[in-house]
Image: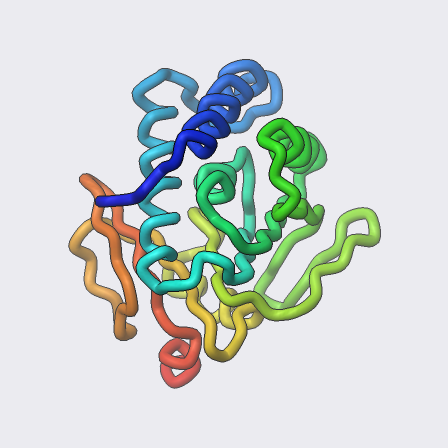
Length: 198
């Protein structure tokens, strides 16, 4: 996996690392905060960013559904040059995401508190999610078989859906970009290809 990480992005990743270590347990951001586990999360974020970079134009709009503790979205935000929206229903996790975004000084990320479900948007505290996005991602939020159909609701018809799968796993749609890792892969499929299948 070849992803270019400039010095500012490494500095931001270092800041995020410290935040995860400081707040990870008290806010239940991840089950395991050991260094090797955090390194894996950072690697998965870089893998996700690289997959999207292979699609060209790193200024596209991006929706990350179920952002949780910021894996992989916050890592992607250190490299991405387009607007990003993180969706997270949990009060503590969404507050952490907002704090992390401010800590790495990126104005391109907005945190929206709510849930995406099969039937649409479920607001928390009157929040709204509107529009379509060029890239839609969501790691470990929906069952694999349901994810593309749900993501398609929020993807621009010419956009892409990112799918986190096992390394080497075949997908039922044509893959536009794919980055393999040791255990997992990130693949991008065209929204129009998913439309023909669902």
